[in-house]
Image (cartoon, rainbow, N blue to C red; front, side):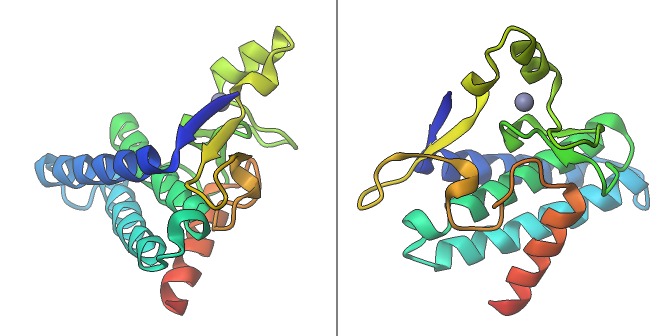
Length: 170
Ligand SMILES: [Zn+2]
């Protein structure tokens, strides 16, 4: 099991988003498809992050929404790293969306390191738990927390659509 304090997720997501925006300013080639996608995802991540923070009950309510913002930001970084758009049907690692998207479909998309641990029958060790502050101060599997990232192994397109809808509704 991997676990993360909500506060660290918040700080990490804020840092990742800032560094993505910084990279975008320094990334030449306006109109490059990877850049366009990274820009869109960064904007969406910032908006979703704000929605989660405004929800001051957000200590628990926003946890899986902040996680969605983190997943979008990391995908933006991945697009810039790879120099190509990440396809909408790419799914996030079932065990931990922060591991990024994996190309493979199937009921349980997993990243390389998680696949390796699964082969050693240690798959569950990599499942992400979040520790949210009291009153819900327990370790909870990420997909059981309220918020946008409610299903393990969600696809990029589904996370984007949920993020857009939540921003529109706020
Ligand atoms: Zn993984």
